[in-house]
Length: 539
Image (cartoon, rainbow, N blue to C red):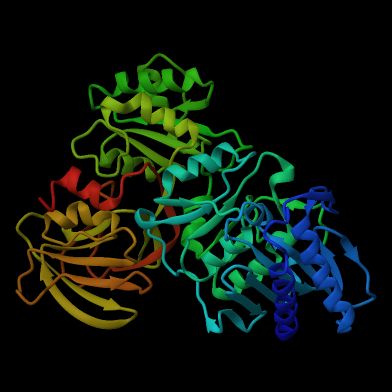
């Protein structure tokens, strides 16, 4: 089938190249089956395809944006866009293709795809379960996403939604080519991270003829295409059907753009919670500023009960608050306390000291809340550690788990296993196990390294170890860590500095990566800028 599609493309190129330069190839000659104008070059290219199919008895029905559906009594249909990027061709912009795909009923059963750049003669093709190729070489989409180096194709033409424009603020490099097939194959070959189309005008959204071929090519290269509700995109063989979409190179791009409960849920009313550390004198004033900002835009919010009492208002306990986003006023400890009682997405206002996990500074509260309400942010997920003690789940840690002596100046022995394989016997004041999130906290004060949040590992840090050979160890988060308390005295286990548990001698603690994660709202600041500014590192 690839050979047939390649031959069809050859026929189209030969025909198009015969058009005299002085010919008005952009002249509109009729209205196509999709309800949009058909230009001279569209019709010439389509006629070349139909002529080839007829002369060579190709057993395919045809669905084209110009002529609509042609029933050739075949089992399968050729989805055809004879000139994708026809507006570019009319303006002599060298970015237009012929796009062809073969399937039976819908986008998800397409099994063969072929795209030819009619200017450069580059070809892209794929067969289902056989991979995708560019000029004969196998291609792969990007496997890793770096927001600070990101590049995306984003539709910004007439009808582009507000959230499309918000997205341009979060992506390092943005392009719009006016040729959806090329924009998607750039994701497939690893040049771009994604392609985003969100039009508020239905007629400017995507048709199946635009993306039938490029969708299979992208999927075979390792990427995926979704509708904006987060479902895998499927479309019927119908040129009147249109959809917005997100095409991504990998799951990290999907999470960055369509992360749960983020600002792309445009039809959903966001519910906010407000929680504050009342031991900080300025917290009431900051809370008042937050409430005033939310009132200006008539947002729904609930105040935590102790804060509400202090302000003479009504409120609820934090674990009773049914909210999407929790606005936390305080420092990192306040955020960790909040996370012991809520699964809401967190945004912190720094009323503490360092406030590494916070996003909004005191001199920027109103602007920060404005960005929050407008959805001008991204959501970052951080993994947690599940803590099991003597076969009972006792909590989850975002930062760290510490097991140490219950009395000052007394060491304890710890026997450590990784996936049930014994690795070391440590005598020390204690042992700390930190996530990348916690690496900038207690672990760092013990001399541990700073870990990028994208590192999928747990850091083990002995505390004042008796033997010099007891070293810090980085352990893959996918592995189970078992700690046996083998001294004849009691131990103390602390989760995120918030929950404490007495452990008798002989206790066994197991640490595993939790199925749950914590979500944080962040603006445009990258991790290393935060480290440099908050911790004064790298100076």
